[in-house]
Image: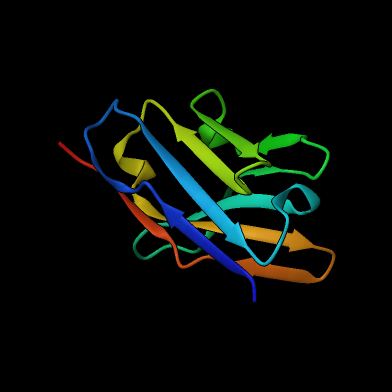
Length: 115
C-alpha cells in the first residue's frame, strides 16, 4: 500500500522559511516523478515543483528562486525548501508520486504565512 506523508507545515511570518517533507512507503521515490502541489482556500490545486526519476527539477514561475525540491533516496523522502515566503504561499501542500498512469497523493500539510 502506497503512503505519502507530508510534514513540516505550520505558521511562518512573511519572509520566513519552511522545509516540507514527504515520506513515502510502498514505493521507491527515485523511480517516480515526485511533485509538490498546493491548494489555497477557494482555489484549485496547482503544481509547485517536481523532480523526475533522473533528478531533473521543474518549478512553476511563482516559486522559482525561492523554493527548492530535493530527494533523499536513502530516506525515501522528498523535500520542499521554501524561502522568502509570502501570504500568497498560504495553502495546503500536497505530495504527489507519479509513474505512468499510477498517481498517488498525500493528505497534505498546511502552510500559513502571516504576521
